[in-house]
Length: 146
Image (cartoon, rainbow, N blue to C red; front, top):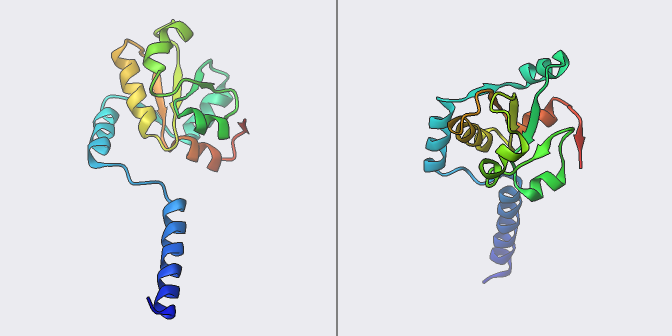
């Protein structure tokens, strides 16, 4: 390869690598279809309604359904961690009341919607999914802890 061609190739590779690292991979169509379907059956709460819920003093449990490594990097203050992969297994022992108010969040609102749908199928009647997830939570400058 000629030196100038090698230089151009290297610059392009670095730029592509930086762009890829900065953006999460796009969800596949089957996943997007599952999320869209789940959202027809669940209740979502946007960040302004979430803030109003917090301010109201009403009792609820905030549950982070993200992966362990995401939780370790930072999570909503006062939240409990039950990853999407285990929440359906663990929820009844951690929150036995099926009418307890639960607010679930993930990174952007997709996994929490799927988890909320699962909990509804298990008989939980007061489950909300935070639209926009942890991204919306952080953008609203709400407290984060590690």
